[in-house]
Amino acid sequence: MQLIEIFKAGNRTDANGVEVETPPADLQQAVDAYNINFHESPAVIGHPKHNAPAYGWVKRLELDGDVLKAEFDQIDPE
Image (cartoon, rainbow, N blue to C red; front, side, top):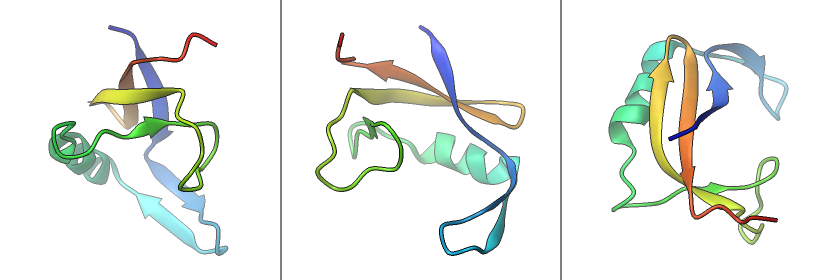
């Protein structure tokens, strides 16, 4: 089970130039809500378009302090 950092809490500028804050509590909500039986998230390069290829799938999420980490499954070996 290897976990990979996918997001860190804090302030950043969104695609529209608006500064947004993402506190650790919001990331914990994502961890608590993630359910592969409802929807399995794809692992893609960058922010995907709806038809971008998946190189794997997010099996589970975990919060480590202010860092959101993911365990991936069904990873494309290429």
